[in-house]
Length: 373
Length: 92
Ligand code: SF4
Image (cartoon, each protein chain N blue to C red):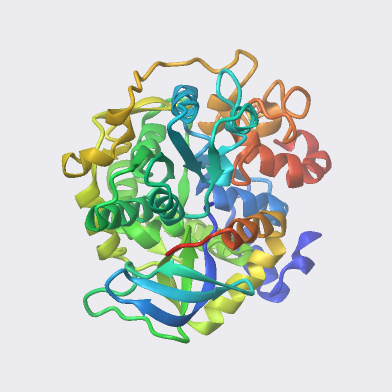
């Protein structure tokens, strides 16, 4: 319990950890998946694992938006960025994500006009300031980020700004979790539901976990104590034989979500029949595309993006790590050919990526517990 | 980009464009409040909101805002990077 003293509320943390330990059946192995990459980061950053009994294993989920993008989509973004008439805009996280022939940072160094933006509204401002250029925004993210793209396009339409389009790579959180539950590779006992995604979609979309699969789910905030408390709530459910969706992050997440965000998303997006996920393959209705009403802003229609599939480099095991089948350090190139300075896979780039979090914070506790994993 | 950062509304700039000025991490930037300022929902100067890529996602009470800020400071690098990107923002 070395790390517990670093908690702001060390006393509460200690009490929660003790109650988790008391509820743990020594003869059982518990696999709890944290769906969201932000949670993965907190877990490593604060050594949450070291506060839990050996019987509880935390499995990292697919909730890191840059990590799950298949390489083909990265390549297509780069191709658009290389067009001379285009000002390509994206979040900082995307710049170093490896495509099959390099990343956006390298293409920028070769002269492409690529600009990092904090918000899609910054991309819109760039479009307004450069009426003779074509601005493309590389949209990524789960339901946390999708409403911001939707509101930005609603505003572009209202203002009649025509020189902006969106290369839409928004994905949805429920279908990949369902795919993981259907996969025979992984037996999970319970889920820590994402916090910020749930401010938008609410808690109801997770009801299929208890209903269809008999797995409890607790929506969690992202402070270390939130995670511990959520694990305790899950352990209580498992102990009492209850199985439901609970909301630990009620101070921010409303059960019904953000209705305005959902309304804007419904107007600007529609579900893709299927979308490819790195490591998980094609998943039905798991991503968003621009709706017909906003087709004029769809970069996929403005530029040809043929949807070529590109296989990951052979040495990479990002897929297995994304599925929770391998721990980051079990990838054969982890820390050798693949490091944050020279990432082979996106999981090593983003701060929400399991490999980067593990590389930066997790190795110490790994050495300590060694073979336990 | 997945971090939500608490900020405090300084001034509502334009209710039609849903723009407000907010103080976030020591700087003042414009943000969109369309997701917290609709139907019966309202924000006004002094309110805390959770900001994600330039959009207020939800209202926070003051205690929650402070505890979130403290947790973000403990995260360190990822928070610093997010703030740095925010400083470049010039939403109009
Ligand atoms: S170590 Fe690198 S190659 Fe291996 S899974 Fe992680 S990001 Fe992918």
